[in-house]
Length: 138
Image 1: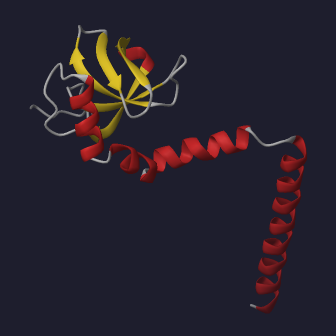
Image 2: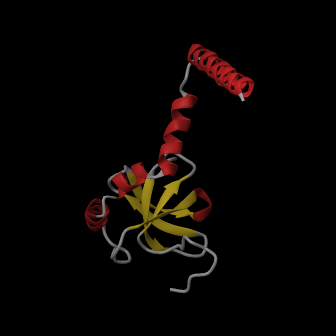
Image 3: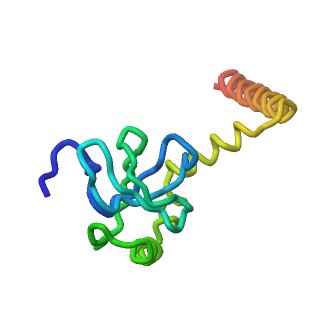
């Protein structure tokens, strides 16, 4: 395969993250390429139904299911998906951890945000005091 400046190619076996819709933030695998605007995706381990999906609503990840045959059935996709431990690889990635942290922050209550703000202020005061003390001694 020719590799240009793009690091993630649309290919059979490429793991994608769904951006919009009912399955947003779920992983799926490209099973077949329909045309230049859509791909057939399937996510048997993540609860995504097999469907044609536009590329505009997908984000390509760095993960690839190796050796997945084109147009593979759901059981074959699930077997390859679990063999390569795609979900555990995804959960270890910085991208997934960032999404998880974003979700946690979105679910904070007003009082939780207030407590975090107070702790940030306390930390900033401690750091500022330490810097001032170090400057005074030097």
